[in-house]
Amino acid sequence: MSQFGYMGVFIGAFAFFCLLILGRQKRVRTGSDFSVAGRSLTATQVSWVIIGTLVGGVSTIGTVQTAYNHGIVAWVFTLGSGISCFILGCFFAAVLRREEVVTVSELLGRYFGQGFQYYSSLFNSCGMFIHIIAQYLAAMAILSSVFHFSQPVSVLVTLLLMGIFVVSGGISGAGMVGKLKFFMLYGIMILSAGLALYRGGGVGNILSSLPGEIDFLNFFPHGVGPTLVDLISMITGVLSTQIYLQAVFSAKTIRQARNGAFLSALVIPPIGILGIVVGLYLRAHYPELEGNSAQALPYFFKIALPPAIAAFCSAVLLLAILGTGAGLVLGVTTNLYMDGIKKLFKAREENALTMVRLCTLAVLLLSGGIVLAGFDTAILQWSYLSMGFRGASVFAGLCIVVFMGRRKFSGLVRTGLYLLPLFYLTWEIMG
Image 1: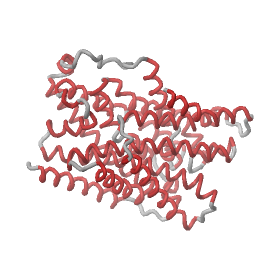
Image 2: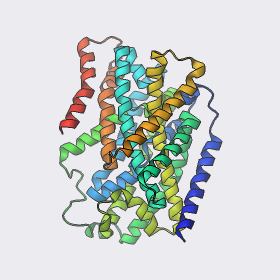
Image 3: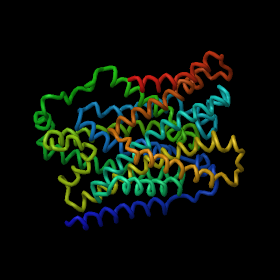
C-alpha cells in the first residue's frame, strides 16, 4: 500500500468513528446537560467517562515509550489508575454523589470556605492543564507518524479535533468516546501484545534479548522513593481530578456511581501490561528507536501489521488520545466556569452554555500555545507532575470531608490545606 493509501485508510477510519460518536450524542441544551448530564448516568456510563479520560495517550503511547526506556516501571500509571478507582468506589463515591455538586472545589468550599474553593479550583485546573499537554504530545506523535506534519500543523489539527469532541457533547460526549475506546483500544492492544510475543518468540526470548546495561524488570529503577512518589501521585491525583469525579457527580444514584468506579478499577490496569509487552519487544529488537521512543507504538503498527490495519489502529489510537484530552479540557472548563466566571461575574443560566464553550476555546488555545513554545518532554513525566499537582490541591481536603464529615474546621487545618500545593510546587522546582 502506498503512503497515500495508508493516509486514506487512516482518514476514513477516523472520520467514521467521529461521525459515529457525534451522531449518537445527546443534544446539549443547558450548562447542566454539558457538565453533569442532568445526573442521569448509569454505572457503565460512569465507567465510560472515567475510562474515556484515563485511558488515552499516556496509557498507550506513554506506557510503551516508558517500557522501551525503563521497563516494567511503566505500569505505574495504569496500576495507580486502577487502585484509585477502587478507592473511589469504596470510600468516596457515596459522599460525592450525595452532595450533588458540579465541581470538587465547590464541595470543598462548603467545608473550608469560598476562598478555598477558588484556590483549590485554580491549582486543580493547573494540574489537569498539564495533563492536556501530555495528550497533545501523544497526538502529535501519531500525526507525525502518519502525515509527517510539522509541529505547528500537528498542534493545530490536535486543537481542532479535541475542540470538536468536547464542545459538541460535554460529559455525555466523553462517555460516548469512552465506550468506543474501551472496545476498540483494548482489542488493538491485545492484538499488539500478542503479535509482539509471537514475533519475539515468547516472553523468555524477549527478556533475554534486552540490553544488559538496564534492569528492565526492576519496578524501582530510580530507587523505591521516586517510584512510590509517582504511584502515590497517580492515586491521589485521580481521586482529586475534576473530570473523574464529575463522572460520579453525574451518576443517577449512589449505587451507580460506586459500581462505575469499581468497573473502571477492573479494566484499566491490564492495558498497561499489554503496553509493556510491546515496549520491551521493541527495545529488544529495534534499538534504533532510542531517542525517539514516543514514536514506538505507531512504529510497531507499521512493522507488525498490514498497512490498512496499521492505519486503522493508528486512527483508533488518535481517537483515544483526543478523547482523553477532551475530557481533561472539559474538567478545566467546568472548574473555570463554575468556580470562577459564574460566581465572580454572576453569569446567567441562559448564557451558561455559550460561556462554557468560550472557556473551552481559551483552554485549547493556551495549551496548544504552550506546546508550540517548546515545553517538550517524556509523556509520562508530564502526567506524574499533573497528578501530583492535583493531589496536593484537593486530596487532603477531600479526605477530611469524606472521613470526618464535619462542617467546621480550625484555622490551622485550613492553613495546612492552603500550603500543601505550594509545598509540592516548591519540591518539584527544587527537585
